[in-house]
Image (cartoon, rainbow, N blue to C red):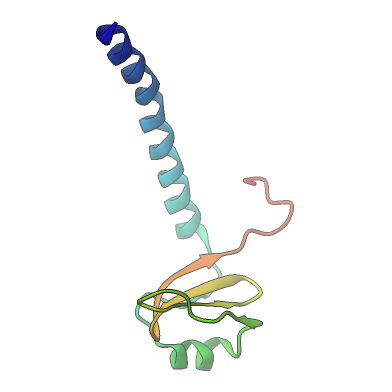
Length: 98
């Protein structure tokens, strides 16, 4: 019984590792192909606002450390305190990769 359970778990887990690798590779490729100017990791809120203007929406900070999101038309910027953690580019509607 235990042997059958271990085999079942192993057979189920093997395909999942391949899927996660493909998604990661696709995400990296999408980021590299982007020609949209966007804030970089470590930029300050002041630098982002100076370079890209006021965001369309400013969300209130959440959690500890405080994480804040600013939404622009083509991307969202996530800050920890006043530094950029990451920028998420928005896909255009009707994109073939959706």
